[in-house]
Image (cartoon, rainbow, N blue to C red; front, top):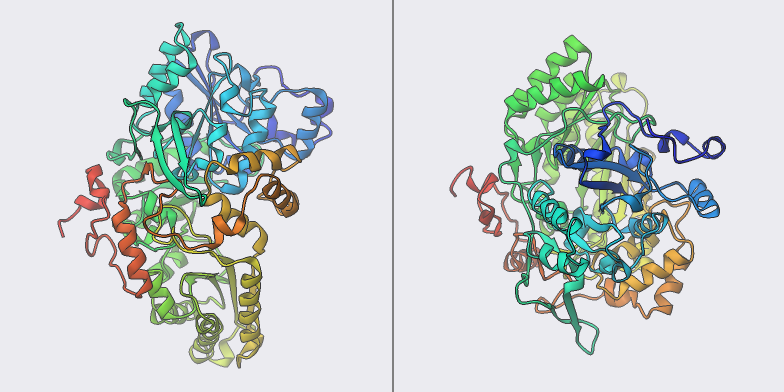
Length: 622
């Protein structure tokens, strides 16, 4: 192993030093003398969270299959180490070889959440790379961003050389081949970026001009060269069966958030919930063959020593061979004592039966993502679940031994009224009544508890609600108190509980999610004034953002609280996710009228993603 980048005296005086030493089981080691391209793959949060992210494990495996490329990992240093690195001028380093990130060819950053934007600047800054892309030279790494936030990369456009739009398994080889030509020639950085912009899915923001109207809206986003695309098309893996997948995932030293084998069974979702960005930007839905998944499960368990496996998808219940796969996993549970985790299940009799068989859990809590308190509002958001479904699922759960139910809701959904808010309390009350009607008094194990929690609805790009206004924090608080008071009016109030999330971070998330390039200066301002780990409550300071917005002329109302006209040019309109704007407009109108749209397997809605030539669009012809 390489000499550690951090001296022992530093490691002995920081929290969880194992975050920074590398050398975990299943890491890739290569001889640097045989390597042409070095990639530092970054998750801009702490090690425990970054090590839980499947996407980095997939790309790490994929890049390291190339003989000319070595991919290593880097995560955001926790504030205790951040302070020491600045005081002692210790550059940020990779885990595998403990090398300074500035020595790498490419710094690839996955962007999962808007509130990590200041951590991106932390990583770039501690790597001794100029924060602003315009200030970099050929001596600096190419900084690439990927992940779901890149469907609107504009608020952070000034910090990145390239954004990779879509799934990383498609266009990276072309980019790396181009990079080799650039590295070993006199090609300039500008010429390299110009050629990179011609590769499908690669967006080079410096090569696009944004022209504004007098009212602050965007008039046009246009390329500065005629030979690069006006729209950047999201990349999609159509041959999902043969896409690379890590059979030897790295096993972290520090217990990660997801410390188990993760088996991706399906990508995308057929449901079409109108608030859900993931359900739109990961279309079309694609499945892995069950035979392959059985082989993957066995190999990954053997290669890691884990005793738990989790199925990964947006809606596991919609995987068509789930029963066959679960029969196999149940055998593993019985013979190898492997526990199975099944997130993203729709609560029905089948799912409850499955959970009883495969999970070593105390039957104490079951979760329903009801999202809205009335059927009218659930139709508006196209949730695809009825009150009857929820009450029947609760009935089956109570019979199966569960005595606690968690309900998730959003406040501030389009068209929401006080009647919808009161419906949250009414639904919780009805579930409690189901319990008392279902379980005889002598068989009750303590008191049933129905806990409802509400989050702040944030409209996201490339959803039918991308045009919707966001309620302001004071209105969110009013609605939350209204719901809380409604809970106190219920007959079984002692069995009911209501909680809600903090409004401050959510309104900021709304600004960043639908913002434009004007936000880059404000984000830089926040970072310069100490903002990092803004996704962590103990480090988030709303005043930093308020001050930065004031200094940089950013109006929260303009970005978060106004309804956009469907004819307005949106900051992300030059990104093509496959889902057409016409489809989103139609769904926006359907939402206003409470019209339900069927899921992709029931009827094709013509969203546009059939152009990719694979997945659910071609399972059957509707």
